[in-house]
Image 1 (cartoon, rainbow over the protein chains, first blue to last red):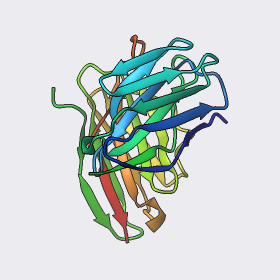
Image 2: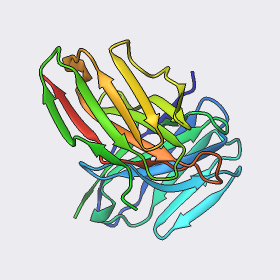
Image 3: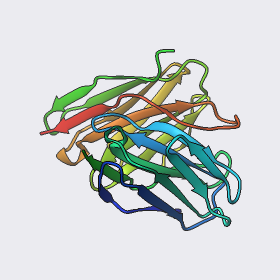
Image 4: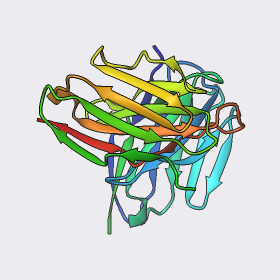
Length: 111
Length: 115
């Protein structure tokens, strides 16, 4: 079945360092979404990418969708302690299909 | 907007007991999803409804799990009988299907512990 793989599983950084998490799908995706879950919280939607090669920015966060629409990445520049949490990608295979979540990357930031 | 409301927030029960989790989606949303989150398996989609009709229940672990959506504003996920391996955080989410963005709005979850 469709799988969405996400790496790394954990990332520990010093405050101010950059962070990147990668997401790969075994099949072409209609779109990909990114969520953030704070410790003890629930996933919160960050962004959706739809177009091949799309790049979107939210302040220090940069999201990319691959040309083949099978991979995506989230890059955080100059991490802050408020960035702590688990970042999930979620791929939609086709409109009306199931949203499949990656395993998530847990980010910890040392002040 | 109150968001997706789940109850209870925490449930501790003994093996063999029936457990019922409840969810109220955001008003106007036409799709509702039940996810289970564990350390080992991450976020798993159990079942989702569109316009109160179950569309895909292939993620439901086994016959001990059942879900209903009697109307647009309420859904339940029932486990009978419960087992220790059912211990997890169960999230309900809703969205408006067919729109430009099908982002999910998650509830706060129910932390279930089966002893």
